[in-house]
Image (tube, rainbow, N blue to C red; front, top):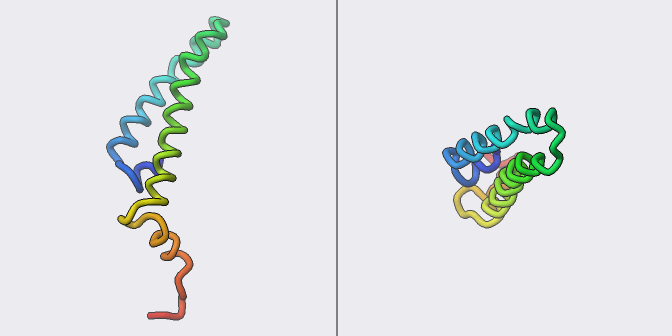
Length: 83
């Protein structure tokens, strides 16, 4: 979520984060009921939120001109002897 907020959109990260909390909120209730098919109604959307944010953040960091891609990594590996 931090990467998505940094490279893509902080507001979008908040909205997707709240969606993740919603999907995970009823997981324990369904688990207690013993309905394994309905567990997918909690697990699949929650992991979709995570994978979506991860994929978009990696793509955005690798292709962005705004502090992303090669410039971002250059910041960490540049020559430290320069002033």
